Every structure is written in C-alpha cells, then in structure tokens.
Image 1 (cartoon, rainbow, N blue to C red):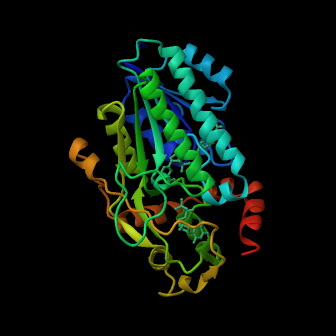
Image 2 (cartoon, protein in one colour; image 1 turned 45 degrees about the horizontal axis):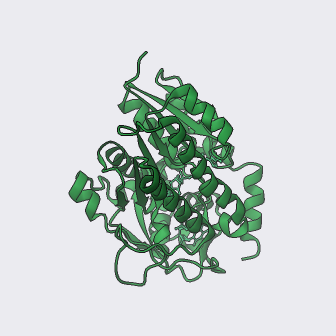
Image 3 (tube, rainbow, N blue to C red; image 1 turned 60 degrees about the vertical axis):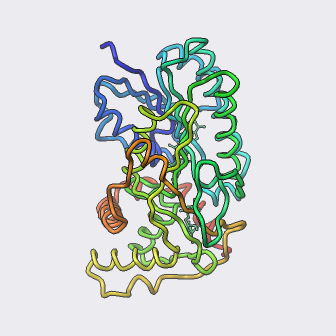
Length: 353
Ligand code: NAD
Ligand code: TYD
C-alpha cells in the first residue's frame, strides 16, 4: 500500500511511546508507523499487544545510538517524520549511573538527527523531527512562577542535563542545517503502562503488596501531573500543526505536593479495594531525600492553548481513578515487568534509605 506518510516513532515500547504508537496507528490508518525500540528494562511489547497485528504497524528492535543501523533503517523506509521518545527516563537511575543517560539521550538523539539530515538532504521542507522532552530541563522552581518556553535552561540531574543536551542539539540542527524540528517539554505523566519505578505506579504496586511507601524527604516537593493520553493528543497536534523551529510546553495545570498526592492515592486504592479509610496511609514512610531533588515543577501551557487549542481533557481525580483501575486489573503485566532485574534495582534503590 502507498502510505500518505511514513513515520518513525522511537521508544514506542515504553510508557509514553506505547500510547503514542497506539494513537497514531489507530488514528492514521493511511500512515505507516515504524516503532524502533531497544527493549531495555523499560520497553515491553506487551504494552502494544492490541495493535501489533494492524497492517500499518511495524516493530523494529534496535538501538538509536547505532548510526550505521539507523542509516539503513532510514534508507529502507524513507521516513517523512520522526517522533523521538526513546530515552533513559528515570532520575534515580541517572544518579546511580549517569553515563548511559548521556549515551542514549545525547548520542542517540545526535545519531537520529544525523540520519535525518543525510536522508532528507536539501529537500527537507515537508519533513518533521519532533523531539519529545521534559520540563525538567528548566531546573527547579521556588513556590512562585511557572516554566514558559523562554525560561533559561538550568538542568540539575544527570537525566535532565542529558535531555537538555539533546534539546540543544535538535535546535542546533534547525539553525545550522534547517532541519525542520519541533520540541515539546512536558510535565510529569501518569497512566497505564508506566514502569513501576516512577512514583504513581510504584506506590500503587506497594499498596497492593502492603509494602512501605518510601516518601523522599518530607514529601513537600511539587510536581505538575498530566494524564498520558492528554500528552499524546498534544503531541499529535504539535507534530502536525506546530511551527518548525518552535518549542511548546505541555502541562496539566495540576500541581500536587507529593505527600498530598500520595494520601489521595492511598484513599482511592482503599476505596476501590474495600479497605477501611486510612489503611494504606499507614504504609507511608519518610526516607532519605533524593540527591539534588528539584523542589517544584510547574508549566505554563498558555502557548499550546493559544496556538493549537490544546487543553487537558481529564481531571486529576478521573485520571487517577482510571490509572488505579488499570493497575489493579493488570497483575500479569505488573508481574512480567517486575521480575528479575527489577528486584535488584528495588533492593539497591531503597535498602539504604
Ligand atoms: P520509558 O523509560 O517508559 O520508555 C523509554 C523507551 O525507550 C523504552 O521503551 C526503552 O526500551 C527505549 N529505549 C531506551 N534506550 C534506547 C535506545 N538506546 N534505543 C532505542 N530505544 C531505547 O520513558 P517514558 O516515560 O515513556 O518517556 C518517553 C519520553 O518522554 C522520554 O524522552 C522522556 O524524557 C520524555 N518525558 C517523559 C515524562 C514522564 O513523566 N514520563 C515527562 C516528560 C517527558
Ligand atoms: P518520579 O516519578 O521519579 O518523577 P520525577 O523525579 O521525574 O519528577 O518522582 C516524582 C516525585 O516523587 C519526585 O519529587 C520524587 C518523589 N518520589 C518519592 O518520594 N519516592 C519514590 O520512591 C519515588 C520514585 C519518587
């Protein structure tokens, strides 16, 4: 079949990537969607079972840092566009092992940009490289203010520094070679298929197992939470309608102090599992703080609202309720992603806190 567009999505077996792949495969049956993923600990093809047989979907196992392989993939498919999600994504892991973050997030992005440049040559007008990034590149806020697109970069963890490095490279390829790119910087996502190392899925899992809920420091850090499918709708709009060379911030207008979110999560799980109110809150345990723990993230999403008409569709209560329902009914998925290496990671991360 002659496809209208041939799209590469990197990291499509991960959390956000799998929702993005599902959305594009189901929404654009006239696009070919190629999902390139190295299937690290965070990538799981179970996340895409429901669409794996669709005719407009292909999976390719491979590493974005392998330029020779990436070049061949571009020659084989002659992509019109790239949505780049693949990354090492967990701050705590970046504190333990920063180099893999620099390798994947900086070198991997550079290899993709170089392959696009070589494949697209001088005729890049209708091509598109969408770099999916994080609000963490802007650093940490005090109790006031919001990140806007022009906020100076001030990354403070190896994760956010490596994402900042990749954002800079994407902009450099736009300014230097005219590679048509857009960047989006999003706040904390939550929802089904998120690996249970991040706060919300980790805590839902621990509650169901009756394990302690390790709250870093005093639990006063603030994050701005967005349901993953709302992020994906924003990515679709930016990919198709964003201006080349532009950056768009995406956020939920939904700031929560960690401890308040954790209490709410405990209450929702107690309610859904028929436990007396207050049961799971007894599992809350304050532990040693994360090194360099950013105090507050909050996004001003005014530009994407004004330019592209995007606003979040779900309230936090609706999104959390859907998310808890999904984790409570997805034992097999949780089991499959938390065997082996996960146990080692958990022990290393939490035993000395
Ligand atoms: P994730 O860790 O769940 O998934 C990352 C995926 O990338 C995995 O499938 C993994 O196998 C793949 N991958 C890792 N290294 C690779 C390599 N060298 N080659 C090919 N594939 C590789 O991450 P996520 O939470 O879905 O985040 C996706 C993107 O969105 C990241 O770029 C992240 O920085 C960004 N982001 C995440 C959040 C969030 O809250 N999770 C918020 C804003 C932005
Ligand atoms: P996380 O989900 O790792 O996302 P990020 O660090 O990218 O914001 O963490 C969200 C918040 O929850 C952050 O302030 C750290 C805190 N946190 C804990 O208190 N305990 C934990 O076990 C984890 C994983 C996170």
